[in-house]
Picture 1 (spheres, helix red, strand yellow):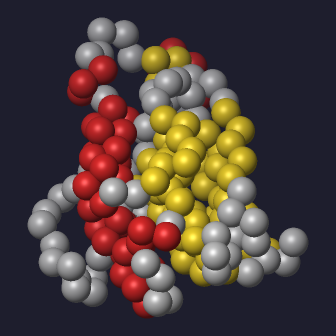
Picture 2 (tube, one colour):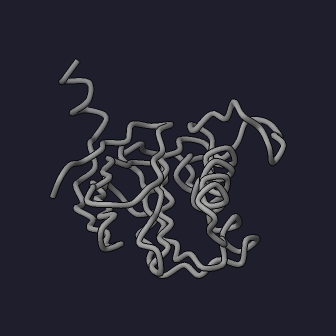
Length: 167
């Protein structure tokens, strides 16, 4: 393994070779695109579904927003002369990481992110070959660009009381 790249919220990566792309997700979501015929792929880590309408040719995209992160991934596929329909998609994240008594699930950003990303995939007609969405706790995700394999390690939920004790 020659290297790894860690994605913080709003980051993205696209390429190939002997590299692992990793991230840590809670309510955020990562889209992983893999093009098996050419052994290239990309991954994004977004926090919120969207902020504004952007054009397909926007240059100043903000990866913290799902719509713009998705647009960037599509632009990268085109820049590498790849057809989106040849990609396999994998989706991760959208969980609850804090135990908040009385919160409705619809208010939670993880639920909104999941609905958003699943709508994107349906609209694009992409084949989703793997998903680990929703639930409780965090996910550590590792994407191997040499093979297209993705590993997920899950962790638990933190209570508000524990968070207050840490402060």
